[in-house]
Length: 382
Ligand SMILES: Cc1ncc(COP(=O)(O)O)c(C=O)c1O
Image (cartoon, rainbow, N blue to C red; front, side, top):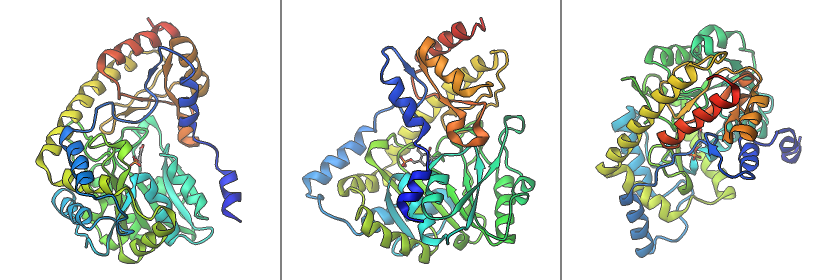
């Protein structure tokens, strides 16, 4: 099957559809798009200006600027207990999003299956398909707090299963895997010889004293490809700087693919990213954002909990909340048309998301309050 044919099979993004629809109306409060409302910290912007002044405006190696790979390697050791050789085991990508197609293309064979706990970030299943693999959704529910169990996974294992996708903290559910849960998923991967692909782009957004655990820190790092990005942690979505680390053979094929895809991410954004990862002011800025998201999370959870018929699990991470609401598409449309509040129907995150709504608390708390008042008035819950 040609790439064109595979592309035809993939539905357009439900989130983008919502975004386009919402842009037709005025006075919309958008809880739709998952992107920080904060500005990139000033010192990081200064580093980009410095890069331009220094003339860092040319191609970089396909694997990324050496200085940035060094900074990533240092960060992975310091914060994630992952050892990664900056020469051979790290690639800088155009946002974390770009890493997924590179990853699957670098090791899946036609018809290989990938287990994807679902609801899920749709890039995973779309890119598995584009690479010729088969995404296998592992449905999770609000009743068990969107927790993944060994049994859920075992039921879907076949002779073609090659990889297990993990995403903690999670988009769209807000669930965070504990160390015990990560360990049990990794043990299953070891037993069945699966590659683990771990998307950690929300690692800095963990609440209630929980700790983010990287699968690569508790198993053979040759079994794990870790994806991360500066987008969410430092409010740098438009800079498009992500990275992946994993076994040398996988990374080298990803680098080869990158040559023919975008050559490299933007040079001056890479320079600023390298400085951002080593400057202690970045951590302080990230912590400030995290504590504000946490405040918003408490508020939106308390409000949603009071709506009759909604089933809500309190999220422990990321900046999303994912209540069960019934008919997700009808309610999302009603909220947009009547309350002028944009939300994303859960079915945009795979069939296991049907019946839910995703709300992103990426607007100031006063806006969340107003959005919740409008929702209450529209569905008659007050
Ligand atoms: C779970 C998850 N992974 C990866 C990404 C990719 O982010 P970026 O490409 O900006 O690094 C996103 C963006 O929304 C996401 O939600």
